[in-house]
Image (cartoon, rainbow, N blue to C red; front, top):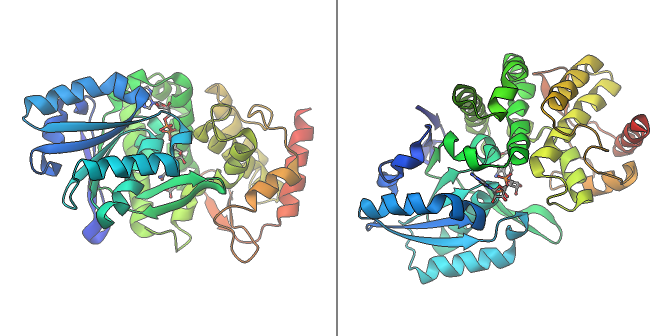
Amino acid sequence: MARLTIALGQRSYEIAVEAGALDGVADHVAPWIKRNRSLWVSDSTVAERHWPRIAAQLEAAGVAAALHIVPAGEASKSWAELARLTDWLLAEGVERSDTVFALGGGMIGDLTGFAASIVKRGCDFVQVPTTLLAQVDSSVGGKTAINTAAGKNLIGAFYQPRFVLIDPQVLSTLPPREMRAGYAEVVKYGLIDDAAFFEWCEAHGADVLAGHPDALHHAITTSVAAKARIVGEDERETKDRRALLNLGHTFGHALEADTGFGERLLHGEAVGVGMVLALHYSARRGLCASRDADRLAAHFQACSMPVTLQDAGVTADGAELVDHMRHDKKMAGGTLPFLLARGIGQTFLCHDVDLDDVAAFLDEAHADAR
Ligand code: NAD
Ligand code: GLY
């Protein structure tokens, strides 16, 4: 069992990582239960697989538990589901001192966190992440959001949970493809500023993906510690520090936009291809060695993860992809800051990127694969 802290003054909280934690869920969440009742939000898939044992334990502990089920899938990060969820919370008589529990992947965490931030001007919430992506990234750090017709995550708030409970064993029911998508975010922490962790990933990535308990525990705790450190330094992404966590995301969001933000290309898969592109683009600009980009691509390929535009099913040309980037919420004064790298473990925010040059690079990337 590991307990990590994210240091944010009055908004500080603990992240517990323990295999089998959900078998003792009533004890773990006891400090957050008020009035002997609890309000839970999950998606249809996670609820079917994991809610019965959680409900049974809460009942045995004498805690009433109400569950709101959201349809599984990214489409539920919507105004419509936000309205359904907040209506339900109000109908349940939620009070400001109550805690709402988010049981699910990044979709449920983002939607529930945003609902908690606005209902009665804010009630507490606790994250119980059930995908690898959510355990290593989205459940920690307080970014909450929904998607709109204008784009992804454009409506949201910084709103920290009060506690995060991570049970790696819950990943045993996660489809392998979702596991690999989450693994891209694990590797991201090595690429940002921890070359030794990247090396560890090269040696142990297969064990992580196979659900080996020790490897999974190390991957999750190292990732969460890195995220907690970075968010602790720059909670609201105002100091060029938290932005490092967006490595691969500018390319990735363009690929997701082209493929429809859904099953064709999962968020983590898009981030993985995006990171490979970011390193290749850095090499093209003479910032890092090509062998670093090749090394990353080789590791992802060894893990059966997509690495090229073709693998990602992207057909749009460079200009079309860059057009998606122009709608990024990080656009400022007509330019878009880009996460580039001087090598593995040496990511930095570059304010000097010409989007036409990025478009030319993406056209070359298409041509290279032909
Ligand atoms: P997700 O929540 O949609 O989960 C992926 C799929 O796995 C869903 O079908 C879900 O039902 C299923 N699932 C979840 N847990 C399961 C389990 N234990 N067993 C079986 N099936 C399970 O997607 P995700 O990849 O977890 O998260 C992606 C979302 O997270 C995106 O909306 C992205 O924008 C967001 N995100 C947010 C942050 C942040 O900092 N807030 C960071 C990264 C990503
Ligand atoms: N996933 C990026 C962030 O939390 O800042």
